[in-house]
Image (cartoon, rainbow, N blue to C red; front, side, top):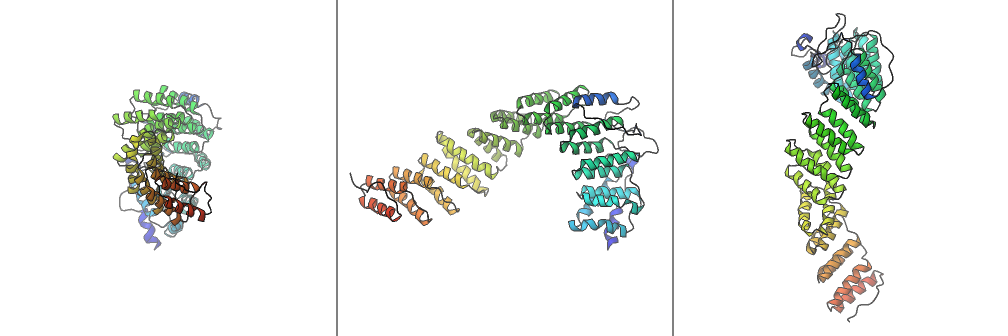
Amino acid sequence: MPCVLVCPWLHPPFPTLSAQQINPKAELCLFSKKSSLPSTKSASSLIRKYHNSIPKSVSFTADNAVISLPEEQEQTPDFDVKGSGLRVQHLAERVRAIPHPERLELVNLIQKDGGFKTIDDFNDMLMAVVMTDEPELALKLFDEMPVYGLLPDCWTYSIMIRCHCKKNDPVEARRVADHMFDNGFRPNAVTLTILINSFCRRGRMQMAFQVVEMMGWIGCKPTVQTYNCLLKGLCYVGKVEEAYDMLMTMKNNGDDPDIYSYTTVMDGFCKVGRSDEAMELFNEAVDMGMTPNQVTYNTLFDGYCKEGKPRKGIKLLKQMKERGCKPDYISYSTLLHGLLKWGKIIAAFWVYGEMVDVGFKVDERMMNTLLRGMCRKSWTDRGLLRCIYPVLEKMKTWAYAIYPNTYCVIIHTFCVGNEIDMALVILHEMVENGYFPRMITINRIIRALCKQGKINEALSVLVLVYEMSRNPSKVSFNLLIDEFTRQGNLLGAYNVFGAALKQGLILQMKPSLV
């Protein structure tokens, strides 16, 4: 059984591409002896220092491509582009097919099957395991290398660096990189960028910049992705000014920052309440010919909404569509949340309508917030009253729960708008869904019904209170007694008075005709 399981993995039915066919990128190792790591410098000064430190004997092509390496040193391929990429993908699919608890036995199965014949076979399997998010299995496989009589090469170390980064352990990944140097290998820009990004995501910027300095020592040119990781890390730890300086240094040194570079610094500005400066960066990026994407716009939406400027977000949304960038769910949701937070209900209702028109569903909590906001706004803007019920129906269509406090506000709103019949409908619907309103809501309905002379309907509300095993308040009885008395129905007034006495309630006065 082990042979049937494992052998096809190591020898899939398609040919393996050679390294010469792929022509992978590589960088030249300029130093065979490591130096001690320097302390972290200012971001912008570090870039300037790096540009001045590239030895003149090294020349990079426009796409940072190939430099000849000594014959004894193996080229380091791009981490995601390997000659046997199709084979690795095939192996990864086979690993995923194994039930999770049984995957750790994979190493034992491979040993029983005779192990690996070449380091390329081993690397392909190691990479496949890392791709399937099994770092522990990858570590176990790496530890078993001596059993197969194999020594790690540059590609092996690069895979293990990514493995530790995926485990969120950049310190251990750095140790692997150091061990890689000790054995005469040098990682390429892609591998080192993965390591830098792992440090940045944990806010360990000093360690990240030390890796950047290391890249300068070995003549490995940082890519725009490398700088983007640093920009995001600086903003993450609150050093927005340093991130901005780095961005400007990139621009002035010809490192060609991309839209992600600008978006990252814009996000940093927005998070500290400086959205207007973020907008200036946005305009600068557009003037440079960059095309803002959804993430760029969403960053500004979030910033404006946090600062209480959601109307600027509305203007930006229209501009976004005019430039051919289609708003996504996050765009609309961010705007809608900000408009509701700052009480811009009419604009929020407009955004909601547009979301529905393009096929997005507003989440349940936000729909309840929108509905309550519309209700309160309709107390002064009666034109909004007719829009409340369609929103309520849309929530039912989406099978959303309507919160008890939302029901209460809706009932109050229909009472204020003299839509008493609708208030009664919503009350019964609320009860059917297992909720019962507070007595203040019950009294509002009774008062509104009495005001319109609908004493029987008002009395039915009091009966409903009894049926739900609740205790009516004095206000409920007084409202009914006053209306019966006003209509000249003294018998009805005394019946309600007697019901109050049975509940132990002492009313202010007995009913009597004036």
